[in-house]
Length: 128
Ligand code: C2G
Image 1: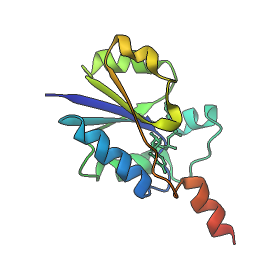
Image 2: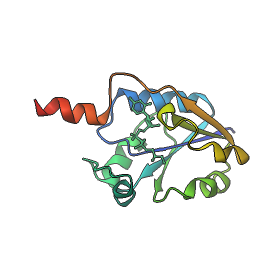
Image 3: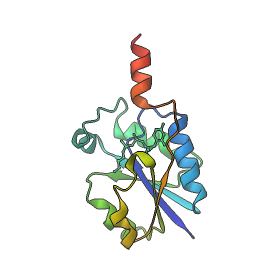
Image 4: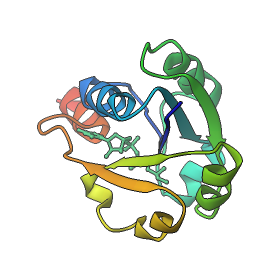
């Protein structure tokens, strides 16, 4: 069984997120999402609209997602890859190169971001 992992906040879930999760799942048979906790979002200077619990419940309802684990730190990725026997680490290419250190542990794949949608765009567009 080929296991894939990806990480993110996935706030105000949109089709760009789904495109990412769909493609990530296509790289294997089992997809784990490391979901940023509210505390970790503070470290990313991100203010999520939905709480961790609600973002987790939403992600667990997606057909491409097999398991959701909390993302509490930047440093947990190596441990997660070992702990969950991960074969492939996948992220959008806005992170290209940032996680190449994981190549010692698993395959690292950066997928093209979906153009034209983002959580910050949704928030901005709703202001007017
Ligand atoms: N994404 C995408 N296309 C978009 C928007 C997002 O492909 N239009 C991807 C991002 O590249 C990321 C994932 O969807 O791989 C989740 O996006 P965010 O919730 O914004 O994740 P981020 O805040 O970048 O957190 O340790 C890694 C971080 O937790 C990543």
